[in-house]
Length: 232
Image (tube, rainbow, N blue to C red):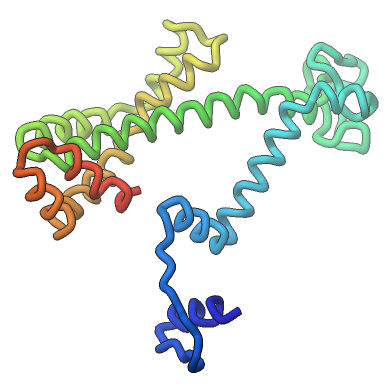
């Protein structure tokens, strides 16, 4: 209780008031604990994770929902031409299409699995590439920074929505992993610029200079590890 009260007083900028006889120690949180505490203090982040989990469960559990609720969730190859173009109802929540009478809600559930693979896969690849390019460019600077940023500027002008259908046609549109890779390779530029700007400021900080001085300006590994957690 006392530690919680002291923590609340420090967060609001007050001088912590302690009773005599208490031994108070300052706890230093790890990077993982800091990230977790910030996440738990962010309502939108928590609701976003809940929404994403609901979408994953609904999409990947579609075959199970079809077995449990066959009157509401249809299999991908089930259709009824007589109900083509039906309006939304209890048995067809989103209605049916006008061609063969497929249940649109069931198609959304089954199609959501491909959308999740493409969306999550492309963002993981784009984040990885953006962090690597931005960190290397921002920390080392010089010719490497100028070259990478010019390449980034050129790729930013490429219209991804026009390139993706063409690339999917070449590499195979029936494989969602290929489409995720294409989107990932075309989406890392903005992340790289953000990470680069953070490293440009962090590499001039005193703790980074101290790490660089401690190694005699030789191996960049300790100095590289110093700004990385702060950037994250």
